[in-house]
Length: 290
Length: 261
Image 1 (tube, rainbow over the protein chains, first blue to last red):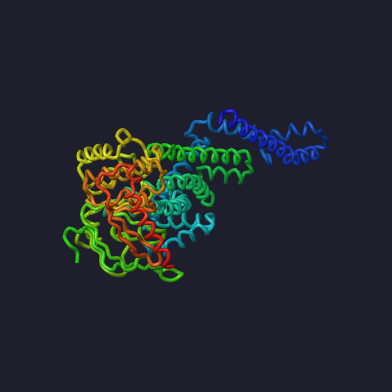
Image 2 (cartoon, chains in turn cyan, blue):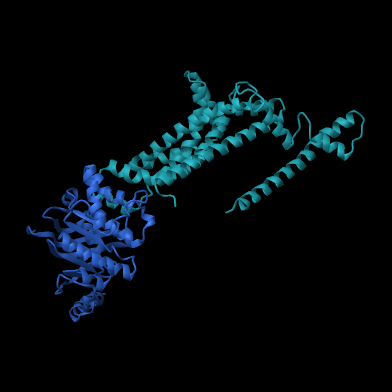
């Protein structure tokens, strides 16, 4: 596909979204403008309403350029050590995300290996693993933080563990499928060589499962970020994207909420992009990319 | 009782699979002896147990009755001593390994030293006419080349017995002829014992010293035909009356098997 064929549809969609957004901003913020005018005993024209809705301090829905200006202000214009820097807050969340993702992936792989090689684990573990994901994370997150605090663990780890709670699941499911993906005749082949279980694992099952692992990791890294943000919400965290969202909603700082949301989305895109890149590089090095 | 120079000795061998629709008699009362250096083909319609018999020899299936010995021991003991190389219907190459790494797989598992592996791979690539393709991945090769690589892999560790389960079944006629010719040369050079499962009458007659005709439900041996063809077999031997005579007997055997139903 040529660059033109890929870029034009994307730009079209973005343009439509921005147009709808501006229209919605005018529509949603107009009430406040009208109320202000009425209180001051003034009448306002449509043009004045539109102009005012584009630049309110606490709009119901900030206009795109307001969010972009806020993003610029809190990233480029602030030192990254500043408590008002969005990069600082993003880093706090990112560190919990990465730690939780690393633990979650490791845990997921280990559980999958156990499930594939042990019939008892296969029968007993899977229902529990699925059950963990039916509990709303918002309900369990504060408890994890409180319990861990009570035994003296605070800071990064509790938040990371909430990421782990979400991210191990797709890895378990993907890796169980991946480790079982080799065709029966490939397993038979190992048997004809009288290969040990260990050799069969490292030379057949593990390499065969890698494509599945990377697909799972793409999902896992994105929900790790969600987990880290959720972990910051109910706990009165003072730093991190979740804390920015929470503070924004306490004080009606909608522009701050939206810019934190955009930062989170950008972070997720970058993380998924990096895992995707690792996926491609690995498959290429294994000779499986065509 | 297994004679010393018999590689395979089956005595009243039977195998029954249990299924939801009741028992399936994959093998029933099979008596067969295969001597060292023989090239034996198993031919018959689907479900006649020819592949199952090969898998029993390879200790990939367990018989439910009778006795079988491989090199004078149980199939399991023989497998653990790596007595045979097995070639599957599909090439069964690992997609993440190059051709030479695929051939190296059994050598790695059997702990051959690195230098020894390299020398063997070189020789094997030459033997199956794949020199210069060692660094290619399986998907970069044609079906025939992939199957040749898988034969090289089965030969890598000097097993005297080669078990081949319809290795050329998925290939076109011309490639198949070529590989048949090469396989005969290889058999002559290496003096291995080969058990070869096939659907094709000309293939069976062209390759074998003996042809075992089987019939389904229950899977059993209906005829064993000794080939009178010379060891030296150019492809056009298939047009000689002698060849056609044997092919005719095989076809009659297959028909007879069917008439039992």
